[in-house]
Structures are given as C-alpha cells and as structure tokens.
Length: 355
Image 1 (spheres, helix red, strand yellow):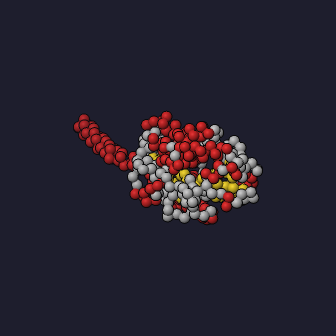
Image 2 (cartoon, rainbow, N blue to C red):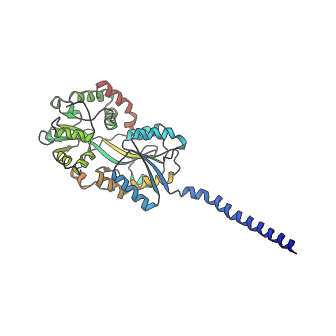
Image 3 (tube, rainbow, N blue to C red):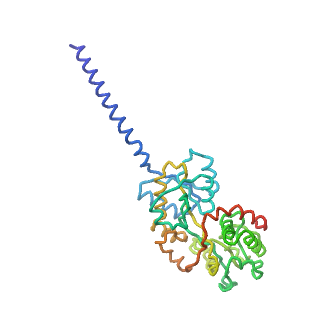
C-alpha cells in the first residue's frame, strides 16, 4: 500500500514538472522578439554638448519611457570609435554638427537608411540625405559680424568682397582645420569651381588681421580688442554671446552687428546639425523615435529659443532673437556637396597657406 502511494506521488510530481516546463518555455519563445522590439533604451553618440540637448533627451525619456544613454565626444573621435567597435558597437544614433561629417559617416558605411513618413513630413528634402542615411535637425548660418563703430552694413556685401584691398588687415576667421571653414570653402567649390574657390581663399588670407586662432567667439572678442573689424562666424555663437551669463561677452556682442552675406548672389552659407542611425544599431526603432522627437515642433522651437539655431522644420517659427536678425537667402546646394568637396577644400587651404 505504502509503495503504491509513493509511485502515484512520483507520477504526479512528474506531470507537474512537465506542465511547469511548458509554462516557462512557451512564453519565452513567443515573447523574445517582442521584448527585443520593446527595448527601452537608445545609445546616442553625440558631438553636440549643449545643455538644451540634455533637457530634450530628458523630455524624450519622460514621454516615451526610452532611456537615452549618452556618449559624448568630438565628432571625429566618435566616428573612429564606431569604426573600431565594429559590429559590436553599442551606438544606435550618431549626432554631429556638420553635414560634411555626416557625409563621411555615410561614405564609411557606418549608417543605415531610415524610412519614416514623420521625418519626411518634418524635415524638408534639402536637409535630408538622398538615401535617407542622415537627417538635418538644426541650421546655422555662417555670417559676417562687424564692429559697429568702424564698419557700416552698407560696406558689406559678399564673402568674396572681403578679399578686396579695403579689407586688408581687417578680417578675422578661425583656422583651416575647422570643419565649418572646410564646409564653407567646399560650398564655394560646388558653386564656383576649384579655381575660383582657391582665389577666394588666397584673397582672404591676404586680408587676415592675424594668423587664424581660436574659435568663433574668439573672433568676436578680437574685434572688440581692435585686432580686426570683421569676422566670419556661425550665427548661433553670436546669439549665445548676446545671452551669455558672462557680462563681458554680452558687452562684446552688443558692440557687433550681424550681416547675412551674398543676399544678391548665391545666398548665405548654411550648415546643419544632423544625425544618422548607425548601421549595426540594436535599437533602430528607438533611434528613429528620437530623430522624430528632435525634429518635431516642440524640440525645434527649443533649439531656436535656447541655442539660437534655425529650425529645419518649416512649421516652426524662429525665435524672437532670430527673427530680429531678419529673413535671409540661403545657399541652394545639396548638403552632400560639403562632404564631396571636403578633401579638395583642405588641399586648397594648404595651397594658399591658410593655417
């Protein structure tokens, strides 16, 4: 009797164990793809280092529940890191502040195409890669700033005019290693051809107030110090100085005027900040959601209000400060040309002695 009882008990335990095994395995098999699709994180490699960006990422996390893991660095360093990490990279999205580097990332096979009706709706075609490998998120104009005490706007016209003799010893700009200048010259190569672009670069070197040094803000400070009278710099730096917590920067900016060159000819040079989904992204869906969030009206308005960058989303009005500078005509060239012509631009800079 006792032996029979133990045999029955053993049989029941085997049945229960079998049932338990099915309950654990079936959901695991069925839910695995769903869990992967519902990953709650995105790894962003970004060369932008602005407080406003961090605030937008927090808002994205609050709205979507998707955590943004940030890896910050210089653009070239991040590109090299993604290459070095290969298929094992954790990068989902690469964000940088120049179309030329986005072009480079695409050419190096680091990005993948994205299809999103929302991105197409929010970002004009001219600020997208032709193969949807990257999308522009903000615009910055490369303008001329001038000393309001020594220069009048009527004296200014084009980038090319700054090579004339009257500007000898009066022009300030950062070095040729800077990607903004490389993209500026790359745009001239696209519009005018290499020979004419080289003539412009040589003419500007002739009129330098000093050997190039420092960043865009340093050019503005050099004007205030009497080193030169005009500088080529990105518009958003001017906005940052006007709204700086440093009273000295505010005072310097208030003594300067901002001028959009080439309004009667080819338009002011415009570059972008933009991003592309990394080819080996493990959270592609979340990366696209972040792109869509950053190009939506609310984020675009924040970029304009807090960092003085122009929105790419045409539904969004520029901020009050940007509007106070007036509307302007932009260069009308494919942004991929900035990357296409980058190597030629660097060569021309070397040939004319632009340090």
